[in-house]
Length: 88
Image 1 (cartoon, rainbow, N blue to C red):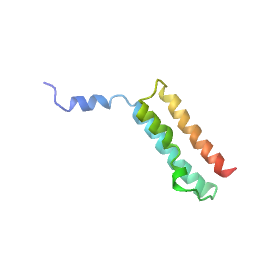
Image 2: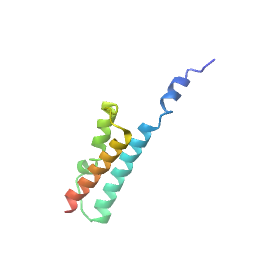
Image 3: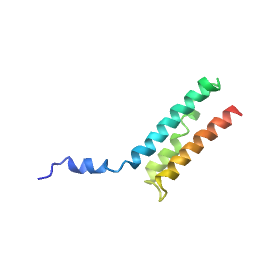
Image 4: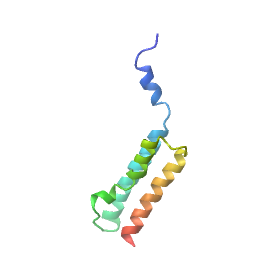
């Protein structure tokens, strides 16, 4: 007989959401550290959270028929764009 927890466990078997979330988290931390300690620039908190914008778009659109790699690349591009905007 299956336990009631099996349905919840099945949701986590696909690690795609975890991978996209991990990329968003690492990019957010890397952006903050590189701006403050690498470039020595104080940037408002909202702009340092910019890599989370595509992540929330991924979560609320449930992928929107794009692959996880595309979403991860979009997060990386937003991170690099934000860094470039404030440094240059």
